[in-house]
Amino acid sequence: MKKHAELTASQIRYLIAIKRLYERQGSVRGADIARELKVSKASVHRMMDFFEQVQYVKRDCGKHIVLTDDGMGKALEYEKYSMELNKRLFHSELCDNIEETAICYFLANLSEEKLACLFPKEAGI
Image (cartoon, rainbow, N blue to C red; front, top):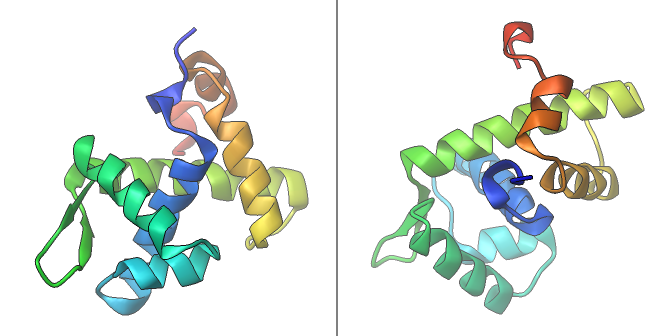
């Protein structure tokens, strides 16, 4: 069975973090992501290399990171899944870092068929 979008839990966390940082700040740099996710700048750099390769982000010469349309689409999709799972599992709108990490691991290991069962299209998720 093909995994949904074939992203790892870590990649899902990064996409969601980039989207949220952009919404809060208007621009995103590697140091912002490192601080948000409590990872090294080197880890962020490697992940951005991967995201550039799959065309989820673009970096400009000023080191700003921007989600492409595809990247934003994936970030929005996974953020919706994450928020809905958080509501179902923890009965809360907000989750802490540990809960979000667990949710991302769960999402990364579901097939498209399982996601479709959990999040039917007609439910608006």
